Length: 512
Image 1 (tube, one colour):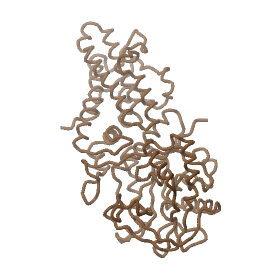
Image 2 (image 1 turned 180 degrees about the vertical axis):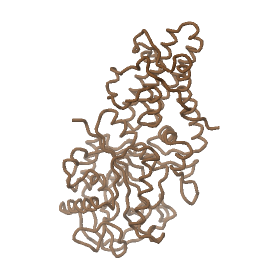
Image 3 (image 1 turned 90 degrees about the vertical axis):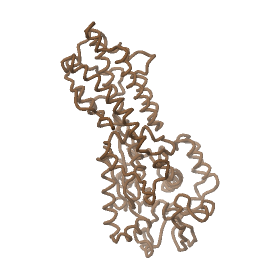
Image 4 (image 1 turned 135 degrees about the vertical axis):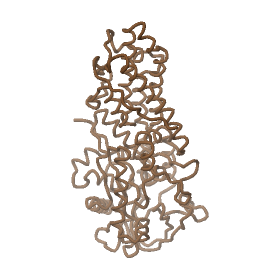
């Protein structure tokens, strides 16, 4: 039986159009999903939309729409990212799905049976932007630092609460026993410090008369679930929990990809809820940073929100994926700059990969009759494969296998591009346009090694730039690129002499 790998993004609120920040998160998850498929693993990749809560309810009313119609429209916009960014998720869960509603109720009852849900009247300070309660220590001038333009609201009503305070020691014990649970470590230390300071029970319901847009509480139709309790259950309801236990056990626990503003919810609140419900905790949580725009935080008021659909329309899917994965550091905040985008596009894609491919294929077209040339030497002895003084294909594969499980997407791409640069350097050093006049056998040997390098590159870039990967494979006549298990790299099937090669148009036309 194949090894299973479950990965899920957070599910974004549908109170605004998709932005480049979520495009980064879901592209990172897609790279991991594709990589694990290349490792011959079964993959379940989940994403979706979070469609309940006060913020969404108010937005729907503001636009004069029925809340269900409103979330239907916005959910469709987020699902369009699948085509725009060439994503491979096989689950798009919506928190208004019937199965999810029933799963949320079952999860509630599991926590209630454990004695962790109680009803009381409390006065709380609440940030609608975060959909979270706030303590005085978290506020600056009575404002949420994440949403300083929104007023803190006071709720004083009888609601249900979750006994978060019961889970300080269980969470700290879990963190101790799972030292790689939160990546990066700086965020792991942050949540450990938060839990160490003591946990406060949090509200998990609202009066339906004041906020009707939510999942009804079992046996109490006057209350609806507070959005975080409902939404977090999507990670397991997407697997068929509680009805399909076989499928649930096959995939859970999984990897969660989340932004740093979700640190508390993903790594403490959700994990405590899982403990309360008697379910296994998540396997790992990868926390990524935010994206600013030309050095400024993105916001509608500043008019600098980056729309991923516009980027794809202008530059193409793989160019957008490349910029997000190569330029935005995985563990820190990064900046989106149109100037830097085009600079990186020209340097790495047009002049780098695209130009190297064009140079090699032009030589084949002119001198080899559009075919992989005949060679009389062992392909595995080619310098671009075995020379330890250069950044060869084995080094790139080693780096990919080491860096992707650590979510270091930018470093993995850097290693691949070092190999591409070595191939380009090899062209310049061997001058095949001169070699063809002196030694045809040696010329064939040089060209074969370059084609073989592009063969390797096509595999290596597949998780990152899938369209480009398949295009290179098609030009090299490797029509069954994804038919083999790349774990057996030592038994790589070499390019066959005589295989038809296609030149084609530039992969990445230079931006002038």
